[in-house]
Picture 1 (spheres, rainbow, N blue to C red):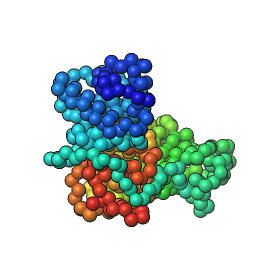
Picture 2 (picture 1 turned 120 degrees about the horizontal axis):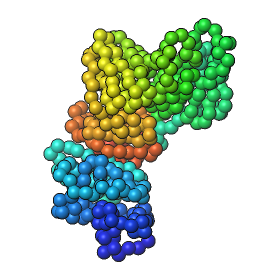
Picture 3 (picture 1 turned 45 degrees about the vertical axis):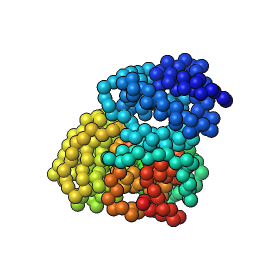
Picture 4 (picture 1 turned 90 degrees about the vertical axis):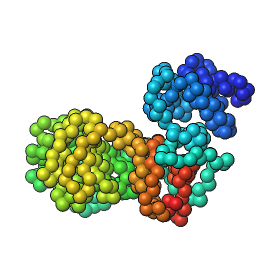
Length: 408
């Protein structure tokens, strides 16, 4: 599709001004998706931003994010995105970095932005960064260990019934989903047996517990749980990260235990009074974070105990029993469950830990104290090379040796 310069300039200006009709929007999106005009797209977007800045229109983080998302997916942008505002906070701290990132957006559906205090402008490279190795993204991988010690590799076993555990049938519904179905409870003995679902680095898995509760396990995580919830409570043990949607049962309260050695000398206990929450309890993270989306949970660590309300996060720094309550970016917390890496002003070591778990790579830093911080969004369903290209464009460089990546 061919458009003359005047027409393209007009369409971009009207896009950001939200005055495009449906036919014009389709015309612009078709031209962008051609994939051969990225340099010109960058120039036109920069020109449009400059003109809006001259007119006193500035975009906030969320507004710019929606704007980019609309461009990527051809969706209709919200009508209020380009309204003049007084907040001078702009999604990209540097216009050239924005342009460089957008070139990747248009080709791969990724976008990322960089914030480094006092950094000089970085011009985009004339061609895509070449990465000498590539790895596919993680996928639905897990190992199930039954109460009798039998091990089932879920990503290779066929769908259907896998085992009978007491009065509970274990069924693989489809790739990435495991369900425990209660059957005739009168057959169940008083002995409680436990299974463990372990997700390796480079994996994720979805599990439905015997009570109907759902658990999504992130890479390098495991969940130990009973094959049937007997007695007065429901308790599971977690290492790593998981998102929970708990089936309500007032007679049997649900709790998640973070074993000692991950939290402190004593286990952390998360008493579930509600339904939807996320727990991040990796051994290599500096803190344990419990984030509540719906309902209520109580987090107990040693002598400390705090009740969370929706939208709050309990953060316990390793080596202490203190529980600090903060208001996190909820979208960032659960982005992994939605197939996205999302970073909210995060330092590079934190970002690389997430990337290393998902792609099952080793990451080492030549600079022990990298000061750069980043915000942005990257699909988890993309190859490692594309993620590294985005980071390279934003000033981070790598030395790659097989599955070992050195951050320069």
